[in-house]
Amino acid sequence: MTDLQRTIYRDALKRSRKTIIEAAIEETSDIPSSIPSRKTRMTGRSKDKIYAENSSNVLMDLRKAALHPMLFRTRFTDETLSAITKHLLKEPDFKRRGAIAELVKEDMSVMTDSELQSTRKYLQDEACYVDAGKIQVLLGLLSEYKKDGRKILIFSQFTQMLDILQAVLKKHAMRYLVLTGSTPVDVRQSLVDEFTEDESINIFLLSTKAGGMGINLTAASVVIMFDQDFNPHNDRQAQDRAYRIGQKRDVEVIKLISRGTIEEDILRLGETKLALDEAVAGDAEEKDDGTSERAMKTSLLNTLRLQLESESIAPD
Image (cartoon, rainbow, N blue to C red; front, side, top):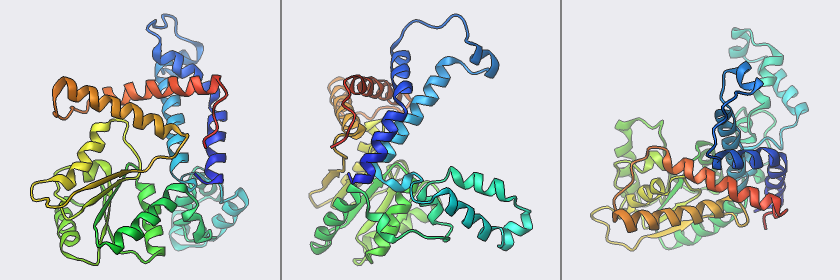
């Protein structure tokens, strides 16, 4: 990871220390709370639900920190947001809707650098796109594979991460295609055909779940998992797109993992689960009923709690 990523990751851990410890204890406790707390009575939300929401937010922040700093707001200051707001209020769409400055700025305050960059106001230097360890490694890999004429599938769970990857590829004049959950079904096969037939396009960006369903991508001989699903079967299903009938090449699968982060734990737990499932049920794919994700989150919270208690919180 880059220095900025390490700072964001450490800050997220320190900021969430209390939540992680409490949530880890709550997740592993078999004793239900018989008396609702005052907060529960007032909000109508159970303590279990509050802990689940808080812990999910913590895990998401750590995953994002391991991916890219632009998944947070670190470069667009409050002063910059005020300046952007003034510009936006002059635009026809905002005038027509009678937008209020305070509300516009409030909405932007919870946006990420990647999202704010899309406003095209006060753009950050394009170097910010490569200020992430995985991006730097990925560019090296793509350069080598391009020389060999190999076609590459790049999967990510996060559409914002795919947006960042598109900006990186454009900056480096690399041709690519994109398929996400929002891609119309009747367009998907034409994208696959274009990727297969056009030798000048060797990169296909896909969201893990959308790209893992019902398409054949045997033109690719490299699969890069930019990040991982809590359910390892979803990642396995995405990887299998390149292993369909008709594949005549050896397929190389690469998983990009940020050292010293929650991603190492997700990888370890996922590999253990796959091995156990295959030992019990052979190669059958697991039905995604949410059980795997809940179990993964519980294990991750316990691991983080132990790390925090031992003060081992800084990624390498």
